[in-house]
Amino acid sequence: MPRVSECVKIPSVSGDAADTPSRHRPALLCLALLLTAYAVGLCRQIDEPWIRIHDWNGAFYSQLARNALRYPLEIHHGMPLVAVGENAAPQDRSIYATHPAGLVWVIAAAFRVFGESEFASRLTAIAASLLSVALLFDLVRQWLGLPMALLCGFVYAIMPLNVFFGRMVNHEPFCMAAMLLALWCWQPLESPPAPGTRHFPRLAGFALAIVFCAAIDWPGFLFAALFSLYAAYAWRCKRISGGLCAFVWATAIFSCAAVTLHIVYAGLGGSWQSLWSIFTARTGSGADDRIIIGNAWTHTVNNASLIAIIFTLIGFTGPCSRRFRHLVPIERLPAAMVLLATGVLWVALFWRQYRVHHYWLYYLGPCLALFAATGICLLRQITVRLGRIASDGSLVISLLLLILGSHRQCNAFFDSLMIPPEYIAAWKDLNHATPVNDRIRLSRTPIRVEKFGDYEFRNITPPQMAWYLDRPFEVASPGSQPAQ
Image 1 (cartoon, rainbow, N blue to C red):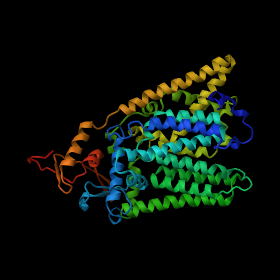
Image 2 (image 1 turned 180 degrees about the vertical axis):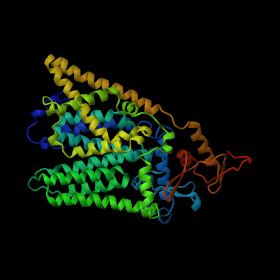
Image 3 (image 1 turned 120 degrees about the horizontal axis):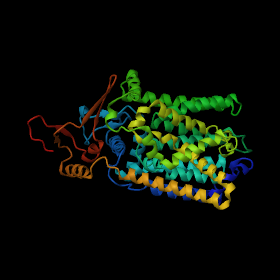
Image 4 (image 1 turned 30 degrees about the vertical axis):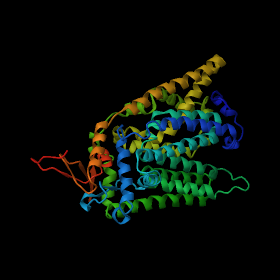
């Protein structure tokens, strides 16, 4: 099996880096090792209750998925529905229309197969993340060769951003898998076709990836728009045909238009002004500021570890330096720039959200891993002058530092606590002790109201209470004796 230390020999790869098919034994062995290592981190505490930081998302979307199966289509219209109990009255239900509905239906499908549980919910995100690392590995193998693919995949698989938030039941793991699948399907479409090559499966895969990504969340819209611009550029440079460029544009327009129309007419009652209010609310200050506020530097260090950031910064000098430019030949991966632009613009457009959410940097994960791997290779190439022992030693030390830094921050994430476990136990006990149609009296309202134009969203907070308690409730009037 090729050693990681051979990554400095990337320039000697002759012809197309994709000459070695992915089914070749060394590539499959490397991929199996990567998937195993990544799965170990992703499956940590897979069935624990929703108590960790950002498990708010898991409880929330699991509640919506349960309601998607529980309530008929004529009530929720295919949109996420907030409600507790099996027969919530209309005034106790609220459609969640600030995001596309795709994620809810993915989790609902898992619930249908595996039953309603934290395990089943997290399993969907874990499967998407494992697909992402497999696609990233094969893309980098085609672009830069097997050694760099192994190193890049390894950095990605141990980075805290990807280990902890790769199992988070939220939009990011699914959109990432769809974006990488689109790039993977696109790669041979931009290359000169080999005799007998059938492009229909790749075209279909690309279209499905774009549609799925847009149906999951708004970054899919951004990715589709940027890829359309890239396709126009590639057509202008005569790298693709006009028909293929038109196909990309048609896929992007159809995907974004279909999802938008569903949100506006099934969730917002036809109010386009409400949709604009939802978008602008994410760019300014808002109620989310009271939930989690940090600074971008702290979140970045926590996501990638300080040593990975140092290697990434070193790796950035590769494309900028004539001496080390061969380590990341940009001309081999032009379409990958779409993913980089998507991650950068997503953070730039919604900078306030990065202060609220640690995981906002998620779409930059593959690029961070690639540049960190490049930084490691660059350092090793510099130390070659000192001899083989020093060169190999720099590689081993770099990898050990990455592992230690990532492991420490992963532990910090997994040890974080957002909801005390005794709260979860109390909600479960109350659920078991209360008949399905009985109402529970609460001492204070858990309803949080958000208004966007003509659209009003009534959420139940924390969503962990809605998931575990799952009983209709009423709020005790002043002076009365509450049941809880």
